Length: 234
Image (tube, rainbow, N blue to C red; front, side):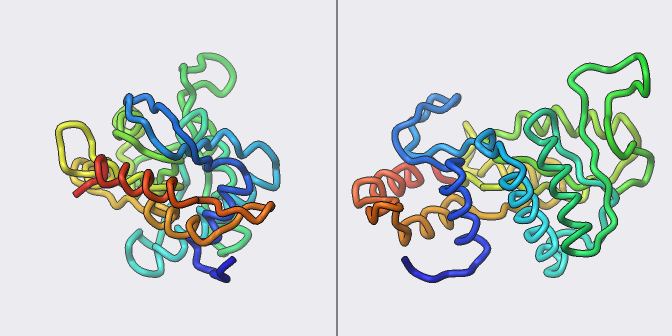
């Protein structure tokens, strides 16, 4: 296997080892038949979720250094439910590995009227707070369009960006724009991903399974590139 230490290559290895990235023939919610599937629910152990948080933190720190993301955030927000462990593990990794003092926040599906109450758990939101969003993948941005008004109704917060695990790089329906580009245009904050799906494919094409077979054989490589040719953003 080719020795490569780029973030995207290491992350692809991690996705495959965790069985969060699988290749085959999958019918998505959109009805599209995809040669790959990314399942954030596959990260089910403490080691896996800690490693995932470290990847998010690494991407966030490098994006801040490069000026893509602002250099400051008060809290990392993850939408319930899959975003909860992402927010917590990313906040821990930013603090322990990069010396950043940040909180974590996630929302409840229903408002709680007893105890601490409210719609949010973790660091509470208030006017002027810088909030960084984390999520796994984004196909159309529907969930984000539900979350942003909820955040802004809690206070005049400043959403400084969104960090994804993988950018699928697919067009939204009725547009040549990707979901990422569409969200950036609509909400005016940057969206970055640990890896794009093209970077994942490029890395996976160099890798082998434990039995020595290629992770992506010739047929799969052709199907993957044909899928992006058909559905990828222009």
